[in-house]
Image (tube, rainbow, N blue to C red; front, side):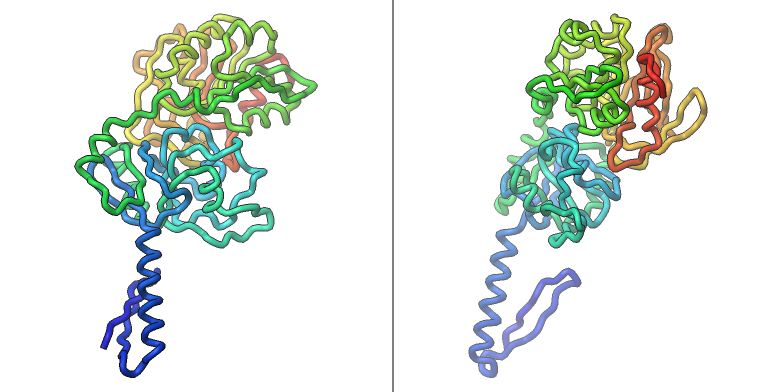
Length: 399
C-alpha cells in the first residue's frame, strides 16, 4: 500500500492506494501528487527577520529577493490606498486584516501612479476578487510593478513580534537554500535612505481652480491631498521636493501645503533649509505627516523614531483646544518631540489618545499649523477633513 497525502487549507488529507488494484489510476494519482509537490516548492517563499525569525508561506507578486523595513498596517479596508501610498517607499507592509484583495484593484482609487512598498505580506490573498468596479487582481498588480510578496503566514504572530521588539528589517526570498548567518548582517545594515527623492514628482503640474492658489510641495504626496484642495475650489500647483523656497514664493501663492512622505525626516537636509525660508515668509502654511516633521525640524525642534509607529485607519487624536477626539488615518514611524518644544515657536495642538505622542502643532505668531495624521484620508475616516476648510479660511477664503 502507498500513502498519498494532499495538503489543503483544512489540513492534511491522506489516503492509501494499492498499486495492484488501481493500475493506471494509481500512476495518475502519484504523478498528480508529485506535480503538486513541485508546484508547492516553486511557490514557496520565506520572510526572514533580523532577529532570526523565519516565516514560510506562498510567493505572491514578483519572484525576487528584497530587503526592507517590515511594518504593519491595521486597516480593515483600503489596501489599494495603502499599496499606492508613497509614504511606504523603503518598507514592506504586513496587513493585519486576514483577507486581502477581495474587491480587487480599482485604479480610480489609487493614491499615486504605482504601488510603493518594497514587499507585501498578507495572511490570505483573494485570488478571485468580486466587485463591479474591479479592473485587476493584487497578484497581477504586484507582478506588473515587480514587487514581491508572501501570503499564508501568521500575520498575527508577525505583528506581535514587531510590537514587542519594535520595527525591524527583513527579507522576502524564494531561495529555499538561504544562509541565515549570511543574511542577518545584511538585514541589520539596511537603511531606507533618502526615499523622498524617489517618490516626488519630476516636474511642476497644475490643477486648475477658480479659488485660492495653493503651492503643494510634493514630498511623496497622496493624490487625495491635491483633490481635497481642488474640490474646495483651490488652484493647486504641485512642486517637486527639490524646488527652492524662492521659486515657490515668487509665484505668490495664497497658501503653501507640505505633503506626507516616506523615510527619516532628518535625511531631508536640503528640504529642511527651504522650509525654514517658507516659515520666515508671511504665507499661510498647512503641513501633513512628513511635512509636519520637517517644519518642526526647520524651526529648531527634534524628532525620533517610534518603536513600531502608527499605521492604520483607526487612531484617535485629541484636539487640545476643544477637547474633541477624532478618529484618524495614520502612517508614520517618526514623531516630533515636544518635551523641549519652545512655546515661543510652537505649541502642541493635537495628541494621540493611545500613547500621548504629538499629533500636531500650532505655530506662535504665524499662520501655520501642522498635523501628523492624514485629514485627506482615503477611503477614510474623514473626521478631520475640516482642517482643509480651516486652511482655506486662514488664506482669507470662506469655510
